[in-house]
Image 1 (spheres, rainbow, N blue to C red):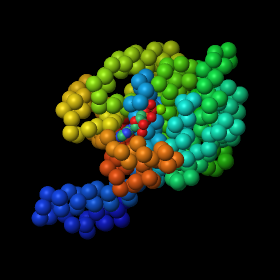
Image 2 (cartoon, rainbow, N blue to C red):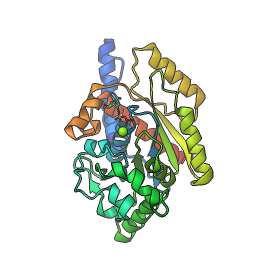
Image 3 (cartoon, protein in one colour):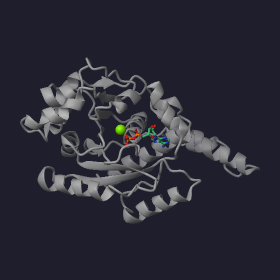
Image 4 (cartoon, helix red, strand yellow):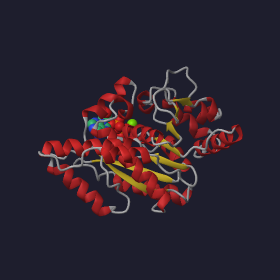
Length: 311
Ligand code: ADP
Ligand code: MG
């Protein structure tokens, strides 16, 4: 961090001759600062479920990029993919063909998590428990199993203990990428986590469905997991050129002033291209505005926890 700050400080200060020169200088300083950042470790492993009942709002994109940003900032991070689509696994460059041991085996067969976890090839300290297409059947298979709502919780707890016993570094963050529906898979994610992290797309229907999601969180809290709470909201796909984006962002901030991260994620082609290269935008185009925004959001998430803002 110190080195990054030094680099940022020797770059020309904003105040160049033209607005463009000023912007370029500002961007360079921001880049240097964020890329060298070392984020604080939380007092204990933070388990967050990335949830929103709407599809296509940026859950998976946020899961993988926040995870990569946290890992690039020195933290140990595990992504658990419980969406049968396996998009998070794809974006992290993780093999998830149907024969690969996966979170399906963990949830349905009781296989230990350490047997399915893989390392992300592009980002150090970043692990992933992949989802395969088998998971599509798990929703039904889970119904008849013992402790069907808490199988993920047990697997995560056992995995953290296993790492400890093996002398492996403690995980700082576990991020669970959920499917859009509220079935047993999502319930398992809500039971395993303490925190719910909600990405909200800056679009007209953004707030619809949110009250249902909050109700579901309350239900889980009342019956299955008293510690569960919404800790973080991130505005995604923000388009600075449209009035609508600004209006939606304003509304969400007004309703949830404590929860919304100051940093929003801009709509960016680089973010949407990255998964087709089996990468997050954090390695696909590290200097892009999308990557820098995720680094900034990761910083807010990590610093809040340590400052006692939330955790
Ligand atoms: P979900 O997991 O909620 O269904 P995704 O993360 O898969 O949503 O995102 C839906 C689509 O939007 C994907 O094609 C993704 O690449 C794209 N997308 C997500 N965030 C951004 C962004 N900030 N800018 C541009 N495209 C984005
Ligand atoms: Mg998804």
